Image (cartoon, rainbow, N blue to C red; front, top):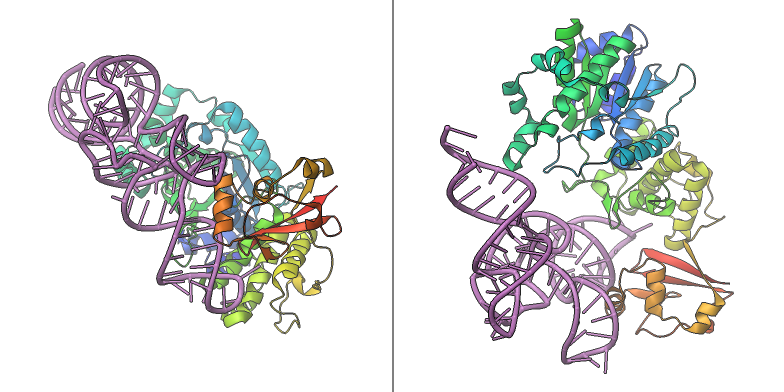
Length: 425
RNA sequence: GGAGAGGUUCCCGAGUGGUCAAAGGGAACAGACUGUAAAUCUGUCGGCGGAAGCCUUCGAAGGUUCAAAUCCUUCCCUCCCCA
């Protein structure tokens, strides 16, 4: 019964590797199990790369299993070399602590931390106090350097350089699993595809120290249909924090995904039933835009809530039109409750009347709104015909005048997709 | 500890005294075409300036020179061979 979740994830394509599929299925069927996924506090917010682990945890929690989210306060002190081509900058303990607080509060949005629910544990609790010599004798002796060097994650780094501190990361993560298995009876660790080596190291360690069998699952690395890294946009990573990635930008990120990715993204990032996901993925030509709206709404609602997602949807529709105004395409998503009318939330910049009187050029206005980084860049934008004021192409830079405002507001655009409302007050 | 190679603009990567804000590619941004997609084509791509030009940039700090990313000195870091 409880192993159904495994099939579900498998069908959704969320499982890349599994140490022992039949064995894990039996374990899950035998009753609620404790499992864990680690999140290293390398930034003060999670980004959409962490969304897959989170969603997998949600699937498991819904199926009745008990998640542990490990906050990697200890492991972040060392830095995971897996999947990276060079050493990450070392974080100070203060940064790590601050980042940890940000991430912990975000996780609470997705997982039920009520009694008997998900638990958040910081691995600094045990890693920070380790005695080096004791650790080497008890744990280090179980690791074969020869074997570690054959791990894919290290092999890559052997070409560009790997410091001893990073080389140790695998032992620390393996030790985490060992501790959780011993103290919490946690027998399953999951993680991204680049975590395979670390996870297997933990399983081996536990077999040797506790003679117990444990399991590991990895998720596929997310790339676009072009094989590019997924989750990057003009402003860098797509963050889950509205301060770092405004809700509308977040919505637009999903809305602008590539055609070829739509079915995979719906499958990975939404909880819509699989047959519906498939149906949406089959849509052709412009109809596929409805699937993108649904994707964008669903993921935004998951991260920022229904209200914020609804507003983002309506705002986008007011700018770009609706992909399915007559609601011909069936969906179970709550998006169908949304009409196209209603509150829109344009990104807004407030401009004082005195500033207008003092004189401000269009170029400066674009920079103020964040639609350009430097005057030169905005000038180039104007030259190339990508700058708009109230839907009219700007021919040349000039001073802003009060007549540019209608009812105290105006809209500026960079290209076709980035826009900002300026309100005079 | 000794020998060698190297650190270039967001990334990769040319450049080895002036013609270098620095080839080429990628990413990014804009335009055309479209469906707020992809592919393709075009343009842009350090900052300030209308422009001439000025300022900042080639690991760091000094020095040589009319002139340095390019030469010298010291330092830091990475790779690699030997011990």
